[in-house]
Length: 206
Image (cartoon, one colour):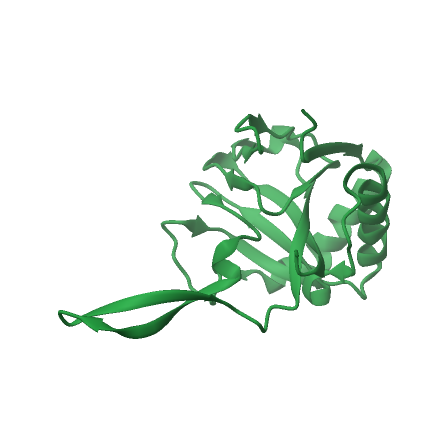
């Protein structure tokens, strides 16, 4: 069975030196508490900090190159661009984590609609949100920190056959996987984990 998860490889070490130094210098001071869908801050589920890097920044072109190359070779999805024309530069410090979640799933396509009440309890009926024009289809994680710089903080992905995959922590490693897959960032026990998260979007699944 072909996995929907793909380990593509890595970005060269000298290029990673440039990327990490550049992000540290220009975006570390913009870090804010990460939020969930709907702009909610729920630290029990997601506890990290992030800054947004626009795709007009030079790194956007590099990452889109990798997206197109991997998609052409492994996924063949209909992709248009990077979601929101921005990339999420994320820090996980001591005891910080992100519980199991999907980057794209049924919750982003359906919303509860009131359809009456019974015994004073609201009856909810789901309907498709027509305003959703594009879906996240591919997620990319770029490991920015050296694996010696932190303990814990493993990223795990649950594949379509329920196989649990723990991603390599080696700096410069790129991972691409279907955005509908469940995944999590486990609690950091020591040090600082840094990563760049990017989503590619395309027309709604039909």
